[in-house]
Image (cartoon, rainbow, N blue to C red; front, top):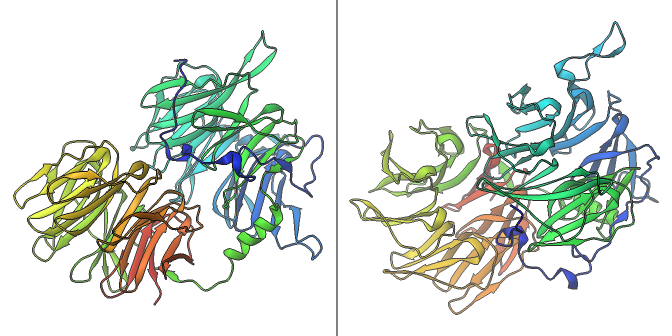
Length: 623
């Protein structure tokens, strides 16, 4: 249990030359943001940043707001104290945008900001006859909040309190514990974890039940960070009498196993964790902060000795740290300028894409067009949509598994595949189960040349082939996830996966094809055998010209999750509503009306282009 774990295989622990970069995570110094007013008694607990705006919350119901360009010509910006309907401490902020924020705090208080004002939604119930807060369950203090791109959120607090927001209202979920809970983290795989004092760690099952994970550590966990499926980082601390105070503890959880990460030094109590510049940023008491990468914990320089409470990510990839005595710090060079540029980049430019009405709020993983021009989209909970003109309708589906991919033609019909290794076929009227792998593996992509030659790829190196009679598993030589497949014909195929993995098919065997990158690759598409693109993590885009692979800069921090092309162009989509188009060999960002993650793009044969993603988002590119 005390062995040091190796996290280097994960994407955000990739290799970077940070020491040579003056703005790298281990080189840049953290400094107090100018113009923030905080007295000796002020504690800032949490914050939110986006669209050139920063919200910071703290004691006494205080929320301060910074908007780039909102001040006088001399200052360029101004911090303002907002009107808030409560005076209790605000411990956590989370939201989808600067016009849709949620705050939680003392006395079970939940607030909502709609871009104009803060309103109280729940908690802080006053016993009017005694002019004090009522001793009721609704007033149980809340300490943390986090949510999904779908709009769902969870807040946690004392006495095992877990509250769930379904996009419309809050309700309590039984946790099964009485421990004081202090952290909640939501994963890209739809998982939710909660942690708290006495080493308690809870996991929310797909059915909405909370299950306790048996942790051998009894420290108070104040922070949790989802890394990947069934994998977490946990941080907190315990009081040691012989050391005369709290000492920080960092714990790695994976697949049911908890292991301590040893730093080789005494650390103060750890307060917050965030993914940051290819690693993990950690803040602690006494003004100490650390950067974890490649199993190395590096102390960072800062000009504060106050307790640091939380990390507020900025869309630019930088961050703000808040804490005791009105502490608001950043390592971003030119803080005000960076926010102003971010705001102008999301300003009033005309959109290249338009959002279409969607019949679902479920996350959509895939969009695909059939030979007759009909588009299909698939997503969570057996969601299958069909497009007629620009209207989308939901089709009845016989299962609740997530649908990740489609393929078909006029002879074979339409196939849909996804979780649990299941493949379904649509005959124009009904979906029926066509194949069941009977394994908990997800099929992520499909391609076929005809009804007697179909390939499917997915988790743990899965490759399936259908010969017209039956599906058979094919040896891939890897255990890495395979995310996408592109084929020139049945004898020339490429599959992309983890850590720069590319497999090439020659009609007989799958063999590794080195693209000289270690980034996760999520999408592949080509016009010919000497004009192929792959895209992936952190804006990765690499081109093959028939002789060699060459990286092409995108100037993006967003992950690119999918790509496709047609006569209208080549497009890639990704996190935070990101879309880029290829023009004259260069990737150029296009404007979209959404901030939701985009998971798939389909470039149709007639030039129309669609993208789908989180919260049921459906976009169409304007001509």
